[in-house]
Length: 188
Image (cartoon, rainbow, N blue to C red; front, top):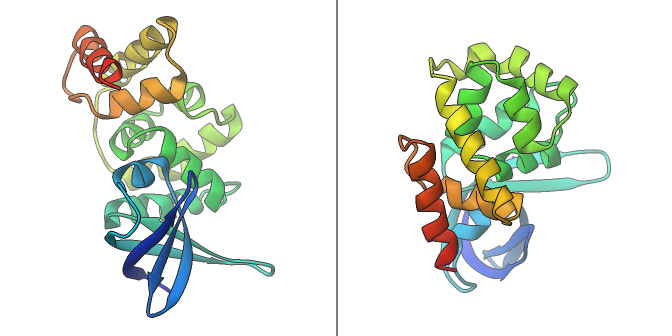
């Protein structure tokens, strides 16, 4: 199995990277977060890779660090979550935020933020709560959710608001998160 890849980016799309190494171009599916960190084609990149083999496909999923890869693989162990769903979940919220939601059994956060159904959110919490192993406060999730809803009410899309909130200090209160996110969104 392919565990990592280092090479030159020859194509970047909204869903994948084409990385050339040893004269072969590998199509590597990636999260929005990974794709946003890749600035241009032609640059050298090193990705940790999850190889997913099915009867009719051989897919690669790339991550910038091992933590992302390990969290992705934890999501895959939840029944009903495939690689595309796991990648979509990782694209929507930071790993830290997802860990908080799972550790505090905040099913409503998972369904509101990631767009997954209630039953799938419950499965994720039940199967991963002990594995994320963090004791976190639920209040920080509420702060993030309040900030997201405030940004949406100001006319920003859910994806724009989420991307801005990923760049904001995690310790900030609701008002500070909104203020910092607005600065980020205004700078575009």
